Image (tube, rainbow, N blue to C red; front, side, top):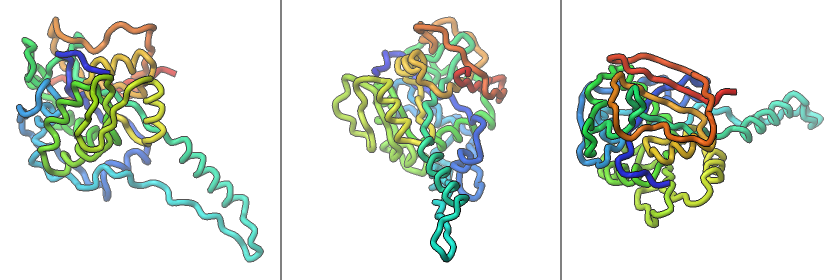
Length: 294
Protein backbone atom coordinates (compact mmCIF):
# COMPACT_ATOMS: atom_id res chain seq x y z
CA UNK A 1 0.00 0.00 0.00
CA UNK A 2 1.56 3.28 -1.13
CA UNK A 3 2.23 6.00 1.46
CA UNK A 4 0.82 9.42 0.53
CA UNK A 5 3.40 12.21 0.09
CA UNK A 6 4.09 13.98 3.36
CA UNK A 7 3.26 10.96 5.51
CA UNK A 8 5.51 10.30 8.49
CA UNK A 9 8.29 7.80 7.94
CA UNK A 10 9.71 7.89 11.45
CA UNK A 11 9.77 5.33 14.17
CA UNK A 12 8.04 4.76 17.43
CA UNK A 13 10.07 2.70 19.81
CA UNK A 14 9.39 0.67 22.90
CA UNK A 15 10.52 -2.49 24.49
CA UNK A 16 7.35 -4.34 25.47
CA UNK A 17 7.06 -6.83 28.25
CA UNK A 18 8.05 -10.16 26.81
CA UNK A 19 8.35 -13.75 27.83
CA UNK A 20 11.70 -15.31 28.64
CA UNK A 21 11.60 -16.94 25.21
CA UNK A 22 11.21 -13.61 23.43
CA UNK A 23 13.72 -11.82 25.66
CA UNK A 24 16.37 -14.37 24.71
CA UNK A 25 16.63 -12.68 21.36
CA UNK A 26 18.22 -9.62 22.91
CA UNK A 27 21.70 -11.07 22.62
CA UNK A 28 23.80 -13.99 23.75
CA UNK A 29 25.30 -14.04 27.21
CA UNK A 30 23.07 -11.24 28.44
CA UNK A 31 25.24 -8.67 26.70
CA UNK A 32 23.69 -5.24 26.90
CA UNK A 33 23.79 -2.75 24.07
CA UNK A 34 24.16 0.89 24.98
CA UNK A 35 23.06 3.70 22.72
CA UNK A 36 25.22 6.74 22.18
CA UNK A 37 24.13 10.23 23.11
CA UNK A 38 24.83 11.93 19.80
CA UNK A 39 22.10 14.00 18.17
CA UNK A 40 23.11 13.30 14.60
CA UNK A 41 20.77 13.72 11.68
CA UNK A 42 21.27 11.65 8.57
CA UNK A 43 20.55 13.87 5.62
CA UNK A 44 21.20 11.17 3.05
CA UNK A 45 17.76 9.69 3.76
CA UNK A 46 14.87 11.53 2.21
CA UNK A 47 11.25 11.90 3.25
CA UNK A 48 11.89 11.78 7.00
CA UNK A 49 12.71 8.07 6.97
CA UNK A 50 13.65 6.01 9.96
CA UNK A 51 17.37 6.44 9.50
CA UNK A 52 17.09 10.13 10.44
CA UNK A 53 15.61 9.24 13.79
CA UNK A 54 17.84 6.26 14.44
CA UNK A 55 20.90 8.40 13.83
CA UNK A 56 20.01 10.39 16.94
CA UNK A 57 21.52 7.45 18.78
CA UNK A 58 24.88 7.77 17.09
CA UNK A 59 24.47 4.18 15.97
CA UNK A 60 27.05 4.47 13.24
CA UNK A 61 29.69 4.62 15.99
CA UNK A 62 28.32 1.74 18.05
CA UNK A 63 29.87 -1.71 18.21
CA UNK A 64 26.64 -3.67 18.31
CA UNK A 65 26.86 -7.43 18.85
CA UNK A 66 27.07 -9.13 15.49
CA UNK A 67 24.57 -11.80 16.46
CA UNK A 68 22.32 -9.68 18.66
CA UNK A 69 19.27 -10.39 16.55
CA UNK A 70 19.47 -14.14 16.26
CA UNK A 71 16.79 -16.19 17.92
CA UNK A 72 18.41 -17.94 20.84
CA UNK A 73 17.13 -19.89 23.76
CA UNK A 74 14.83 -22.10 21.71
CA UNK A 75 14.20 -25.57 23.02
CA UNK A 76 16.21 -28.41 21.58
CA UNK A 77 14.23 -31.24 20.00
CA UNK A 78 12.86 -33.73 22.51
CA UNK A 79 13.87 -37.28 21.75
CA UNK A 80 11.63 -39.97 23.18
CA UNK A 81 13.52 -42.48 25.33
CA UNK A 82 12.86 -46.17 25.50
CA UNK A 83 13.76 -49.03 27.81
CA UNK A 84 15.42 -52.22 26.65
CA UNK A 85 12.08 -53.47 25.39
CA UNK A 86 12.01 -50.60 22.91
CA UNK A 87 8.74 -49.20 24.26
CA UNK A 88 8.53 -45.43 24.43
CA UNK A 89 7.36 -44.00 27.71
CA UNK A 90 4.12 -41.99 27.53
CA UNK A 91 5.70 -39.09 29.37
CA UNK A 92 8.43 -38.75 26.75
CA UNK A 93 6.01 -39.08 23.85
CA UNK A 94 3.75 -36.49 25.47
CA UNK A 95 6.65 -34.06 25.89
CA UNK A 96 7.58 -34.44 22.26
CA UNK A 97 4.01 -33.92 21.10
CA UNK A 98 3.65 -30.86 23.32
CA UNK A 99 6.81 -29.34 21.89
CA UNK A 100 5.60 -30.03 18.37
CA UNK A 101 2.28 -28.35 19.10
CA UNK A 102 4.00 -25.30 20.58
CA UNK A 103 6.20 -25.00 17.50
CA UNK A 104 3.19 -25.33 15.26
CA UNK A 105 1.39 -22.49 17.05
CA UNK A 106 4.29 -20.03 17.14
CA UNK A 107 3.42 -17.11 14.90
CA UNK A 108 4.81 -13.71 14.13
CA UNK A 109 3.23 -10.46 15.32
CA UNK A 110 2.41 -7.33 13.36
CA UNK A 111 3.84 -4.42 15.35
CA UNK A 112 3.09 -0.84 14.28
CA UNK A 113 5.39 1.76 15.80
CA UNK A 114 5.06 5.54 15.44
CA UNK A 115 6.25 8.91 16.70
CA UNK A 116 3.28 11.20 17.37
CA UNK A 117 2.58 14.58 18.93
CA UNK A 118 -0.06 15.00 21.63
CA UNK A 119 -2.60 15.80 18.94
CA UNK A 120 -1.66 12.74 16.89
CA UNK A 121 0.51 14.34 14.20
CA UNK A 122 3.06 11.91 12.74
CA UNK A 123 4.38 14.02 9.87
CA UNK A 124 8.07 14.80 9.41
CA UNK A 125 9.56 14.19 12.86
CA UNK A 126 13.05 14.16 11.32
CA UNK A 127 12.93 17.48 9.49
CA UNK A 128 13.71 16.46 5.90
CA UNK A 129 10.28 17.16 4.43
CA UNK A 130 8.63 20.51 3.79
CA UNK A 131 6.37 20.41 6.82
CA UNK A 132 6.49 23.74 8.65
CA UNK A 133 7.25 22.03 11.98
CA UNK A 134 9.65 19.50 10.50
CA UNK A 135 12.10 18.02 12.98
CA UNK A 136 9.80 18.46 15.95
CA UNK A 137 10.92 15.19 17.55
CA UNK A 138 14.50 16.50 17.80
CA UNK A 139 13.38 19.38 19.97
CA UNK A 140 12.32 17.15 22.86
CA UNK A 141 14.80 14.75 24.42
CA UNK A 142 13.75 11.17 25.05
CA UNK A 143 16.76 10.35 27.24
CA UNK A 144 18.85 7.21 27.50
CA UNK A 145 15.84 5.02 28.25
CA UNK A 146 14.04 6.24 25.17
CA UNK A 147 17.11 5.61 23.06
CA UNK A 148 17.42 2.11 24.45
CA UNK A 149 13.79 1.34 23.69
CA UNK A 150 14.40 2.35 20.10
CA UNK A 151 17.52 0.23 19.84
CA UNK A 152 15.89 -2.83 21.42
CA UNK A 153 12.97 -2.58 19.04
CA UNK A 154 15.20 -2.48 15.99
CA UNK A 155 17.34 -5.42 17.08
CA UNK A 156 14.38 -7.60 18.04
CA UNK A 157 12.58 -7.31 14.72
CA UNK A 158 12.37 -10.40 12.52
CA UNK A 159 11.22 -8.51 9.43
CA UNK A 160 10.08 -5.14 8.15
CA UNK A 161 6.68 -4.46 6.58
CA UNK A 162 6.58 -1.09 4.83
CA UNK A 163 4.58 1.11 2.50
CA UNK A 164 6.20 2.05 -0.79
CA UNK A 165 7.38 5.57 0.06
CA UNK A 166 8.85 4.50 3.39
CA UNK A 167 10.48 1.54 1.68
CA UNK A 168 12.06 3.70 -1.01
CA UNK A 169 13.52 6.02 1.62
CA UNK A 170 15.00 3.09 3.52
CA UNK A 171 16.32 1.49 0.33
CA UNK A 172 18.11 4.69 -0.59
CA UNK A 173 19.73 5.18 2.81
CA UNK A 174 20.70 1.79 4.22
CA UNK A 175 22.57 -0.17 1.51
CA UNK A 176 25.47 2.28 1.58
CA UNK A 177 25.93 1.95 5.32
CA UNK A 178 28.08 -0.61 7.13
CA UNK A 179 28.23 -2.08 10.61
CA UNK A 180 26.16 -4.55 12.57
CA UNK A 181 23.10 -2.34 12.79
CA UNK A 182 23.13 -1.60 9.06
CA UNK A 183 23.73 -5.29 8.38
CA UNK A 184 20.60 -6.07 10.36
CA UNK A 185 18.43 -3.81 8.21
CA UNK A 186 20.08 -4.75 4.94
CA UNK A 187 19.90 -8.50 5.43
CA UNK A 188 16.63 -9.02 7.29
CA UNK A 189 13.50 -9.90 5.28
CA UNK A 190 11.67 -6.84 4.02
CA UNK A 191 8.15 -6.70 2.60
CA UNK A 192 6.79 -3.70 0.74
CA UNK A 193 3.06 -3.35 0.11
CA UNK A 194 2.55 -1.65 -3.23
CA UNK A 195 0.57 -1.95 -6.43
CA UNK A 196 2.96 0.30 -8.36
CA UNK A 197 6.44 -0.90 -7.38
CA UNK A 198 7.73 -3.37 -9.95
CA UNK A 199 11.40 -3.65 -9.16
CA UNK A 200 12.54 -3.85 -5.52
CA UNK A 201 16.33 -3.77 -5.61
CA UNK A 202 17.09 -3.68 -1.88
CA UNK A 203 18.44 -7.01 -0.70
CA UNK A 204 15.95 -9.60 0.59
CA UNK A 205 12.85 -7.62 -0.41
CA UNK A 206 9.50 -9.05 -1.47
CA UNK A 207 6.75 -6.94 -3.05
CA UNK A 208 3.25 -7.70 -1.79
CA UNK A 209 0.31 -6.84 -4.00
CA UNK A 210 -3.27 -7.97 -3.58
CA UNK A 211 -5.22 -9.01 -0.51
CA UNK A 212 -3.65 -7.37 2.55
CA UNK A 213 -5.22 -9.72 5.10
CA UNK A 214 -4.05 -12.78 3.20
CA UNK A 215 -0.53 -11.40 2.87
CA UNK A 216 -0.35 -10.62 6.59
CA UNK A 217 -1.57 -14.10 7.48
CA UNK A 218 1.18 -15.63 5.33
CA UNK A 219 3.83 -13.43 6.93
CA UNK A 220 2.75 -14.37 10.45
CA UNK A 221 3.04 -18.03 9.52
CA UNK A 222 6.49 -17.47 8.04
CA UNK A 223 7.99 -15.54 10.95
CA UNK A 224 8.00 -16.23 14.68
CA UNK A 225 9.04 -12.78 15.88
CA UNK A 226 7.99 -9.18 15.33
CA UNK A 227 7.12 -7.97 11.84
CA UNK A 228 7.56 -4.25 12.35
CA UNK A 229 5.80 -1.45 10.49
CA UNK A 230 7.68 1.86 10.73
CA UNK A 231 5.86 4.99 9.65
CA UNK A 232 4.01 3.93 6.47
CA UNK A 233 0.92 5.93 7.38
CA UNK A 234 -1.54 4.56 4.85
CA UNK A 235 -0.45 0.96 5.41
CA UNK A 236 -0.53 1.30 9.19
CA UNK A 237 -4.02 2.77 9.10
CA UNK A 238 -5.25 -0.03 6.82
CA UNK A 239 -3.81 -2.67 9.15
CA UNK A 240 -5.49 -1.06 12.14
CA UNK A 241 -8.82 -0.77 10.37
CA UNK A 242 -8.72 -4.46 9.39
CA UNK A 243 -7.83 -5.58 12.94
CA UNK A 244 -4.48 -6.92 11.75
CA UNK A 245 -2.29 -5.12 14.33
CA UNK A 246 -1.09 -7.27 17.23
CA UNK A 247 0.70 -4.43 19.00
CA UNK A 248 0.68 -0.65 18.61
CA UNK A 249 3.60 1.32 20.00
CA UNK A 250 3.36 5.08 20.29
CA UNK A 251 6.12 7.40 21.41
CA UNK A 252 4.12 10.49 22.31
CA UNK A 253 5.99 13.79 22.46
CA UNK A 254 4.61 16.56 24.68
CA UNK A 255 3.84 19.06 21.96
CA UNK A 256 0.66 20.13 20.14
CA UNK A 257 1.44 20.84 16.49
CA UNK A 258 -2.05 21.79 15.40
CA UNK A 259 -1.62 20.69 11.80
CA UNK A 260 0.01 17.98 9.75
CA UNK A 261 -0.59 14.37 8.79
CA UNK A 262 -2.22 12.50 11.68
CA UNK A 263 -1.83 8.84 12.45
CA UNK A 264 -5.42 8.03 13.36
CA UNK A 265 -7.87 8.40 10.52
CA UNK A 266 -11.38 7.18 9.85
CA UNK A 267 -12.08 3.53 10.67
CA UNK A 268 -14.96 1.27 9.77
CA UNK A 269 -15.70 0.64 13.45
CA UNK A 270 -14.39 1.48 16.89
CA UNK A 271 -11.18 -0.28 17.91
CA UNK A 272 -10.99 -1.12 21.64
CA UNK A 273 -7.38 -1.35 22.82
CA UNK A 274 -5.78 -2.47 26.06
CA UNK A 275 -2.79 -0.65 27.55
CA UNK A 276 -0.10 -3.31 27.90
CA UNK A 277 2.78 -1.11 29.05
CA UNK A 278 3.69 2.53 29.56
CA UNK A 279 6.75 4.50 30.56
CA UNK A 280 7.80 8.13 30.78
CA UNK A 281 11.27 8.87 29.46
CA UNK A 282 13.44 11.88 28.82
CA UNK A 283 11.68 15.24 28.83
CA UNK A 284 8.17 13.92 29.39
CA UNK A 285 7.98 11.60 26.37
CA UNK A 286 5.42 8.85 26.88
CA UNK A 287 6.00 5.35 25.53
CA UNK A 288 2.64 3.62 25.23
CA UNK A 289 2.12 0.00 24.19
CA UNK A 290 -1.36 -1.11 23.19
CA UNK A 291 -2.80 -4.46 22.19
CA UNK A 292 -6.29 -5.37 21.01
CA UNK A 293 -8.70 -5.59 23.94
CA UNK A 294 -9.90 -9.14 24.65
